[in-house]
Length: 358
Image (cartoon, rainbow, N blue to C red; front, side):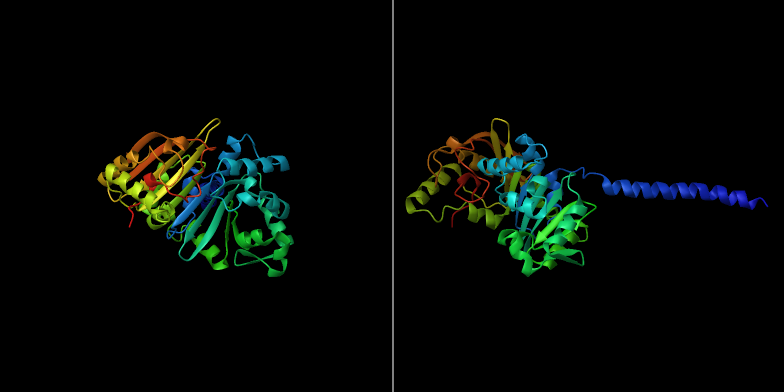
């Protein structure tokens, strides 16, 4: 009759192990992501991403002493100051805070971060809710707005689109919520929402699998807002080609003095908003560390003097403070006067961040 107690004694540790595993799984699912916000955000975008924008809403609220931005006045200040200080240029939700909060019960003011990626097969926005947001409340509001859920994707009915307005309907017409990770994904097409969800779940590679993008992003860690562009997009956005012959001749002369420009494989810029000042980093990835070092020398020489293609001198708006190379990435860091220029749109001539003409 001895086997009974032996069996019971064996079941106790097995049960304890099972409970421990269950608790561990439950806890791990609720652990905050230990990575930087920028890394987490880019890891949610597809590998084919060519342009990405990032906005660290939690950091911006902290910069502006807004805490949770839970009042209408705080949300208004966030929207207004974010624009004035060029902090929300890369956001697709930043200009919709008041209307979105009224319709959806949450807005960019309730996010930890937001990212937006453009790939050949579509564009998508991914954002992480702050801890103050109830996912259940978000879903209940979606139902009340006329969304229906199919295979995990919420779609706004055309008949109810006018209730939220054309901008919100276009931006949030198809969305999904990853409850465990507290992420919301939105895209113009439901199938692209599902594609992004596969990336988030680790079933498909993310943008961070692209070495050049990953390296540039690493050099911009800690930025409140970031713009990343593949080489061709970066070259077009900083080009002087639309300017007159006199400006082009001035640019050619400056490059001849500094040394030849080489087109980067990926570029980025990241803005940090301090209490009393801002700083901005321009980063570019090249084919090798030696090429990056040579391009750093050339681009440093182009980072002072007449701001070719713009008025005044470069140092009127951008005061070069540091020039460094990290592997194959060259980085220029400037002190920035936000009253003298805004650069997070990514558009406008910038020879020190540009490409060879031709």
